[in-house]
Length: 197
Image 1 (spheres, rainbow, N blue to C red):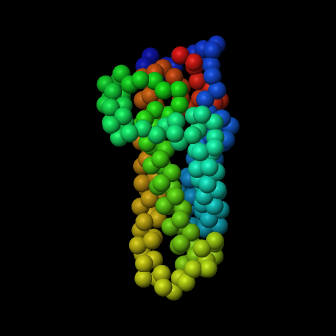
Image 2 (image 1 turned 90 degrees about the horizontal axis):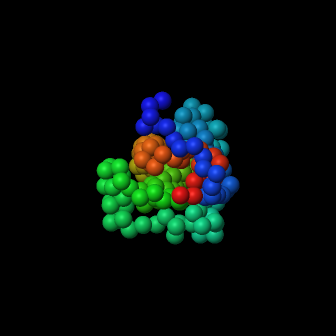
Image 3 (image 1 turned 180 degrees about the horizontal axis):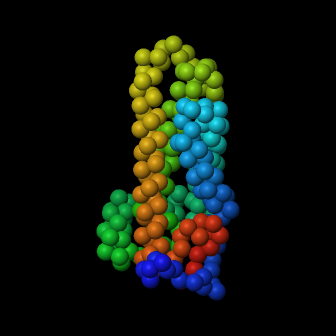
C-alpha cells in the first residue's frame, strides 16, 4: 500500500459518531440494493423481498432523520448549495475542512440517494401491481395504467441505474476524504467511532 493510502492509527481518544441504527441501516441497505440490482427479473421473489426490505429501511431512516441521534438527524447534514459547491472545490484542492458527521457533499449524497431509492422502489411497487396483481399497490385500477407501464418501467430502470451511479460517486468521495484526512471512514461506519480531533 502506498504511503498516501495509509491511515492514521486509531487515537486513544475516539468518539461515537454513528449509532447502531445508522450502521445497520447502511450495511443492510448496501446488501439489499445489490441483491435487487443483480436479481432483476430473473429471481423475482428475491428481488421483491429485497425491495420490501429497502422500503422498510427507507421508512425507518427517514423517521430516524428527525428523531435520531445528533449526527443521524437531517438537520446535522443539510447544507446550502453554496456550502456544497465550496466544499467540493476545497476537496479537489485537498484542503477541505474535516467534519465529524457528514460533510456537505456527503449530506447532499444522502438526500440524493434517499430520493432515488424512493422513486426506484415505488415504481417497482407499481410494476409489481401491474404485472402480477400483487403487493401493497395491487388494489389500484391497473387497467387504466397499462398505457403508462412502459414509462414506469423506464423510470424504474433509470433510477436503479442512477442509484448505482450515486453509490459509485459516494464510494469515491469516501476514499478521497479518507486519504485527505488520513482517516478510515469505512471502518468508522463499522465501529461507529471517529478520532476526536
